[in-house]
Image (tube, rainbow, N blue to C red):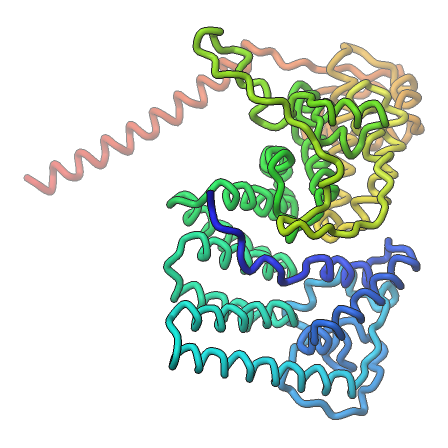
Length: 492
């Protein structure tokens, strides 16, 4: 058993989502107004002077295009240029799509004063600990300072303080928690390079003896990062594996994890894996299913995670005992590891459920309709999915085309267009792009109105692969021979 996670409260990643909504042209007016109110309340409650300045400053603020209050001369204590990390927080740089945050000089000065007083209290605590207590108390004071900078939204100072605490910490679990906190700072400010490098650090620490809980938490962190860099095929197994052991509520809600898992699995998993790990997974049914399916999930259906079905091919005598059925407790979904329930806005999961069902059963007309609804309600409304929404929709259309065409040698163009609920011209243009990119092995005969699939000859493919591998091997042997001769001539 590992110790309880530390440094998990800040930064609040839901605030990054609120900032995203304020600049997202796809967000509704009600969503933007709610996000603005939530953000303003958080800035006041947590004394977030650096973040407030980076967002609302009349000259440097990324969400104050009107320049409101630009005549006021401001200090540069918490200065952030528009070209800084704060720019990555917004969805669109076009002012027409943004909701401005009004600037209040008196509020900023009060926040700045509160910040200075809090920092002074941390310094006094550290000085007293150094004089009267031990290194543990000193580290605790330094940790509070690091969490303070993460709370108020100063990326550079938060990372600097977390690293300072890390250098003086000898406990492995605490080191992992500090690295995970740095990852969240990178996620908050959409610094993908920082996130990638820090995840590699966390993996090295975990491999050196990290406990079960932190190992599982890192899976969710890594899966979310892979989504942001469009590596859905790598993200899917990590996210799906996190469903039954999820405790990283500082990262996202459980329902959000289900959405990410379903989308990653739908676009990347093979049909058999898609069935077992997404369509029939009880953790996913508990969120997306109807009343009967949710009841079935609660009754203890087998988990659909990546390890599901591992016993199927083993001999009975050597198989390990069957684990207890995975039961999804719906009353605990959305609760943090500290037992405090996170209040989530009601979400209509029906478009996502329809996408999964229609793709699997081959109802392509409903599939295209559900895909459009998923783009509008999920891809276009989420900070992590928004950037790659066009790619996702294109790949899902491709998956639908491939699934239908692999069952036929010849398909009528009009018939296929009718199945998908689109015009013949649209289908012709859309298929042509995938054919030109060699993503679909078929040809379109527009004169006769048919699509002919070109099934690859497995024997010819195997022969070609062997020839390529043989050429590569011969090249390596030639280089090796040259190296050996050179070394022999040197000895001579």
